[in-house]
Image (cartoon, rainbow over all chains, first blue to last red):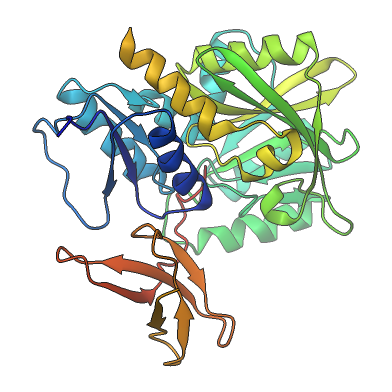
Length: 282
Length: 58
C-alpha cells in the first residue's frame, strides 16, 4: 500500500472538511483523517508528508500544527499563522509592524480603560474579544452607557480572553465587507458580504448576503500582503473599505469557504488539493 | 441509507455511508444537534454534539 501522503486533522467535520478529504483523493493523493477528539497526538512521526490543519477550535488547531511541525511535518497552515490570525490583537500587531492599514483600535482590559478608548474613537464603535468568530460577542457600541453595560457583563465571564476588549472604529461602508481567499500567495477570488436587514454584522453565519466580485488590484495586493505577513498558505482575508481605500479587518487561519464557493463558483477544495500536491512534488 | 438512533429522543436518522467521524447532523424531529462517532471497530453511533466553545471559529 502506498504511504499516506496527506493527513487531514480536524475536530468537527463540516462540509469543508468533507470536501477537502474528497478533493485530496480526486487529485490522486493518499489521504488519512485524524480526529483530534478521538486520538491523542504525540511528538512522534505520524508517517505523513503534510498535514492540513482544520480543527474549528483555534487551540486544537494551534497545538496540532505545532506538534506536527516539531517532528518535521509541514502544515497548512503553520502554527504561527493560526496563532497570529486566531488572536486578533496579535493580528493587528503584525499588520501594524508591516504598515498595513486597519481600523483605529485600542485594547482595553477594564471598564475604565474601555471608556477612555471609546472617548478616543468616538461612537459608533465596535467591541470584540480577541478570539472568536462568526460575529460572536461582537457588539456595536452607540453610546458610553451601552459600552459600560457590555464590559460589566463580559466581566462575569470566566475567560480572561473574553474580558479583553478590542474597541475599534466602526467602518460603515454600507455594512459591507469583502472576503478574499489566498492560497500559496495566489488570489482565489473575492466575495462581498452585506449584513441582512436588522443586523449590522455581515458574517455569513449571521445571515449576511453574499455575492462574488472581481477582486480589484488594490484588494488583491492588500490580501496577498496580509497573508504573507502572517505566513498564511491558505487564509481568508476580510477587508473593509472607507474613503481612504481598503483596510484589513481580520485574517482567518482555518477558513470556512462554503459561502465563498457558492458566491464565486471557485472549487476551493480542489484548488487546495492541487496546491498541496504541487507542494509535495517539489 | 443506514439509520442510526437519536440519543436525545430515540427517533431514527438517515446517516450516509460516507459520513466522516465527527460530522454533524441535526435531527429534524427533535432539533437535537448530533455528531457521528465511530469507534476503533468501525461501529457507528450518534452522540450529542459538543457545545460551541469560545475559541471556535475559522
